[in-house]
Length: 330
Image 1 (cartoon, helix red, strand yellow):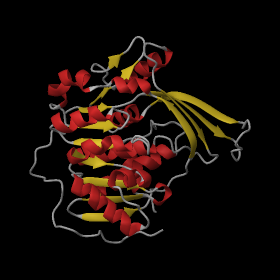
Image 2 (tube, rainbow, N blue to C red; image 1 turned 90 degrees about the vertical axis):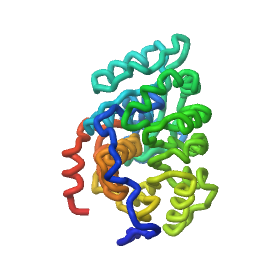
Image 3 (spheres, rainbow, N blue to C red; image 1 turned 45 degrees about the vertical axis):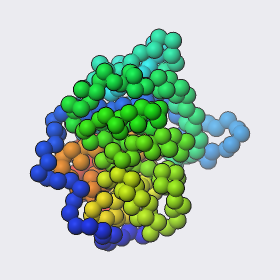
Image 4 (tube, one colour; image 1 turned 135 degrees about the horizontal axis):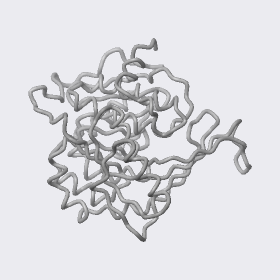
């Protein structure tokens, strides 16, 4: 593994100004998707075009919902702003969120809508092979719906948005939200929706294909990771975390530079939800006043804890579990 011992230096200083009063005790508002996740993992090597014996799980998910639950597990006050139907999936998701301590008072219901669902098939080792998402209802999370909530959003500590939202809604967030904003690109298909929001972002976590779409650059090699992060910084993003899968993450600060950080040690059971755990832990670390690199290390530890669990969100995640994971030898 190619790990840089020192950051690629640009300017002195830190993005986080410790003199700035952050409302760390305020609510984090997560605006994004909820899904019912259906996940299948074969017992042996996946055979395309055939019926594969294995394990199928059904659980509440969705990028926004997963981030919200991870933030709760890390001790944050969280309010999830999403939209659901009035079907069976919605009932299960609402009950799960309330049991997890996720506030839903600002979420919406469409009596005629179909609650989002996500169907994935994994490789034997838990890595995603293919997935299908049915999320048309998210298009109803329009600026008109969110406008009355603006005073509430701007009274929180942070807004976290995912790219399941319509592009016009993400542009509205960029124009109107005054608290720090974090974002998850979700997928290659949806990442371009974040373009109007980049100038506002405190942090973002794309993978390489998503970063290529957001920057218009071809990323080949570690030097290009730094250049891609620079391009995102020029667009306004303060903290960039480019996911490299099993290699770890390229963590890059607009002032301090970048570094390739390896994954925390773990035995992978399922990789679904690992990125959501990363975003939640990186946002939590930012609100705790930690720098970009330390936030990345904690986020990688959170991802490793998630990877060791068959669920998209690990109930074992906590600040203490992250500390324990960080104490293990690499």
